Image (cartoon, rainbow, N blue to C red):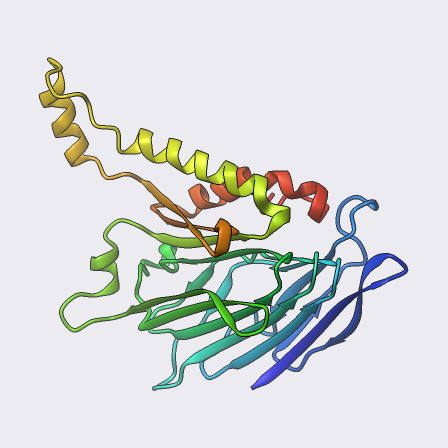
Length: 294
C-alpha cells in the first residue's frame, strides 16, 4: 500500500507542516497561504497522478494534527474511480489523529465511480475530548453525460471515530453493490447523490445547532402535509403523493453529552448538495481562511 504522511505542529505560534511525504500515485499540494494572513490554518490538497484512482490502486494517507493546530484536507476536483479491470478493486485509507484543542476539516469533492468500478475507502479518526472534526463524505451516481447512473459494481465507505485512543465514538459504513435482483440505480430511484456530514467538538458547536435547525426547516417544508378537513386537502394530498422531495436530509446527535452531530443527505442533483454545504459551513471562514466549497 502506497503511503503518504503529513504532520502539522505549532512552530512559532503557527500551524506548520513539519513533515510531508508521499509516494506515487499519491501527491500532496500544500499552498503557502489560503485566505487571510491572520488565519492560522494549513490546507492540504490530495491528488493522484492520472487524475483519478485506477483499478488496483491501494493508497494510504496518515495525518497528525498537533495540539492547537488547524488543518484542512481537501481535493482539487471530484475523486474519479476508473473502471475495474477483471476482479481488481481500488482502495483508499486515511488515518488521522487530532490533538487537544486542534481542528481537522476533511472537505473533499465527491467521489465519482465510473461504470464497473470497484472502490472502497476506510477513514479512521482518533480524537480527544476537546478535538474538533468536520468530515464530509459523499458520492455521486457517476458520469451523467455518458448515461452512467449508479453503474459501478461496488462502493464501500467506512468512517470510524475513536475517543481517547480506542473508545468507539462513531462507527459507520455505507455499502452499495449491484444485486442479482435489483441494481443500485433501481434502489436509489431518482436520487443521484448521497452524503454524510459529521460535526464534532467544541469549535463546531454553533454550527451543530444551526444545521439541526436548518434541516428541520428544510424537511418540514419538503414533507409538509395539509390539514385534514381543508377543502383543498384532496388535491394537495394527491400532489404530495406524486411529488418526491428532491432533497432529503436528517440529523442525529452522537457521543457523550451530544458532542457530535451527523447529517445524512440524499439529493437529485450535485449542485443542491454543494449549495447546502456552502450555506451550512460558510461561518467557518474565520477558522479556515475561506468558506468551504465556495
